Length: 337
Ligand code: NAI
Ligand code: ISE
View 1: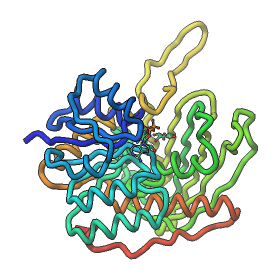
View 2: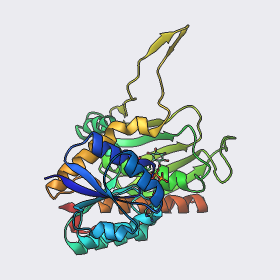
View 3: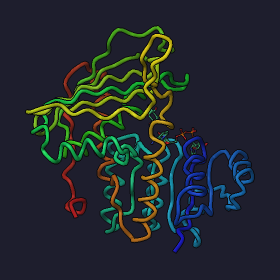
């Protein structure tokens, strides 16, 4: 049975997801769209010849009889109420990260889902679907380097738009490491610390770049991550896990090593879309297949809540310049099933 999808939020990544569902993936069709920018959405619908129905109100879309499942790619602050509407309607929903912009909001989604009694929510943490991260996880789970002791990461973007300010490095960008490292290490975090380094002259107003985050896990693993979003030279994701017997690195994306004009060099990608393009495809195809079977096998509402709570603790740690405990509610048994 082909899944009939409704999409809320048809901006940059919403449009990318719609195109991959329509042109590359199998098992789903986009039949309904909603965005606060109605004119642009209608224009996109026409240009892509989707033939979808454009709704002025997301609630009407969620509750439409011919919509089986939802994909939310609106701005982060809108996710909570839209997710709650999907859970109330009892419909499966894929929601882009961050699931919510506050820990309390994340917990409200968890509580609503537990109350409903069946998992419906999957969060768009696509790095779990990246071939490199999957290979790294296999290496760790096989015990190849022994128990993990430390992790060194970097999340670098060449530049960010003027609207990227304040704590977005933590809530919008670092949130990817927050999720993928918990999954990689089979562990949870207990404290966070954020250190601001020397400010780059390329940080625009309202942004202090780069910063460094230190996380401590329940097992005592120490994680340091450099977040440098105006690094100029590329979109560069690094992750090295140091274990008791060795160290394992996230593989670099493939590039042709060049020996040219007196230099030997490898390419560095310039944007996140290129870096994770394959993982978005795998993530959404698996979500479609799982949804058809009535299952949620990707990052859950619990993972979304954990990420929001950790990001919130990081924001607090940055503000107070202290080591902040990460306080997490008791995990409902529902999420261990
Ligand atoms: P965008 O600004 O290009 O698009 C957001 C769209 O949502 C806009 O068209 C806007 O009009 C619409 N919107 C805002 N509030 C709305 C509401 N209440 N109801 C309906 N529509 C609403 O932003 P972008 O880059 O597409 O990001 C969207 C979401 O996807 C964000 O949560 C972002 O963090 C996430 N994202 C995830 C990425 C990933 O790697 N997984 C990469 C980029 C974005
Ligand atoms: C962006 O919002 C994303 O989600 C990208 O995946 C991330 O790498 C980038 O740094 C964020 O700003």
